[in-house]
Length: 208
Ligand code: SF4
Ligand code: SF4
Image (cartoon, rainbow, N blue to C red; front, top):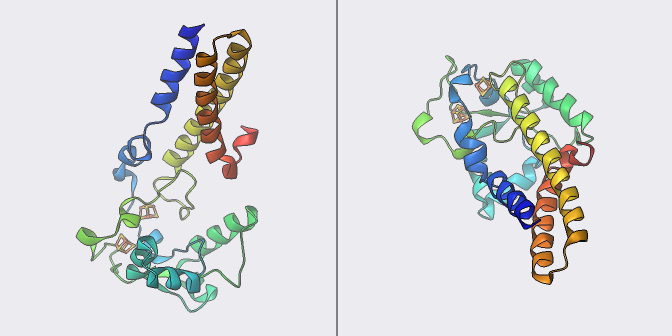
């Protein structure tokens, strides 16, 4: 019985390697086609005015973003430069129920050169180095990372399914355990596993 518990705990520790170890360091940069689409048209979930306020208040992420990106005058202006990218973003946000056309702003990076190369490469901020920074990032159509992101999403779904099975195993184990100390340990692991499953709730982990 205890061996089962130790097995689950060990799997739990392996699964909980950091975001850097699990995702960022494994991102094959060679997949980037250097098409420049993500530099030419970008957006954020935070409205422009709020972003400026955050930058003034010292938010590093907002400061980094606004240090390279300048807003297009309108959605149409952005569409003239990257219609497929703009429409893809709008469609994804609409599907997720997150689209507010009055608040969305598109941006272009001032460092992108006509040959699609970055004139600020050595000093580009972390947001560029890490793009696409999650398996659910909205990438421009035909981004070289698309297939890899699909597999990363599948891997996470499989991990969450395994964790749900582990929760069931732990539930059974609890029924058979009398020792108070062991029960407490099991509950701690249960809580941690549940927290991890909940982290992906916004992507639909309840249904995986
Ligand atoms: S859109 Fe994708 S393939 Fe193109 S430059 Fe950006 S990360 Fe690279
Ligand atoms: S700084 Fe370079 S990599 Fe980052 S968005 Fe601008 S052009 Fe692209």
